[in-house]
Image (cartoon, rainbow over all chains, first blue to last red; front, side, top):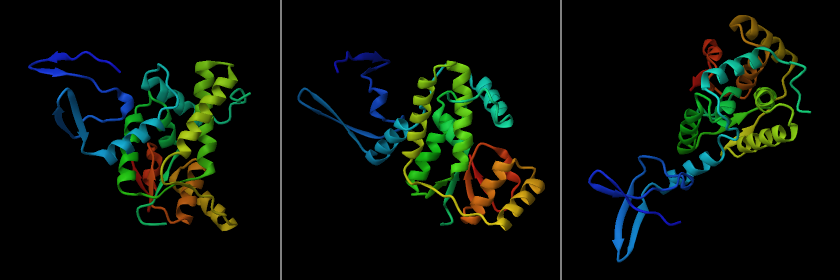
Length: 88
Length: 147
């Protein structure tokens, strides 16, 4: 992955893809070795666990506001079983 | 079961698999806490009855009649749930007296039959904590809700 550094205030920034699973607040140690910038994760176990949780959450993703989603869930829970709601 | 064992309710599992659910992020925080504390987690087939029905209802309204897509999404959500570290399925053999007592729980605490059966399942397995976004459980003595 190739990125271009960009400026934020008085700093230069690069982004870390979300898929890596690092949560905001994760502590990292920075070190420069010649032309390499090395970030060492200090909360490695939490990071791995967080990534695993991310990977096993949110199987269903579509645009719907949470209020109408709540209303739909409430209706479904209170109206079991609607004969039209079948898998096939 | 240990004092800190937690039963995962339908509302928790549903919220964990719908990215737009108001408690989606909260389920991830709670799961991280459970992992950090090595909390033994339990659920039962009763929960899947409602979990599947709710997801099916939502997906039917969003996707329509593309049943293969719906099937694949529900399967993915189910696999995700089975991947929750430390999760065990419990299905205690309930006796007639347990079912009679479930009826009393339904009457006393105005619970739906399935929720009352969950309470009986928890009490039989000596689980005192439930991860749920359903406040109906708050009224039941001996059960503490985590949300």
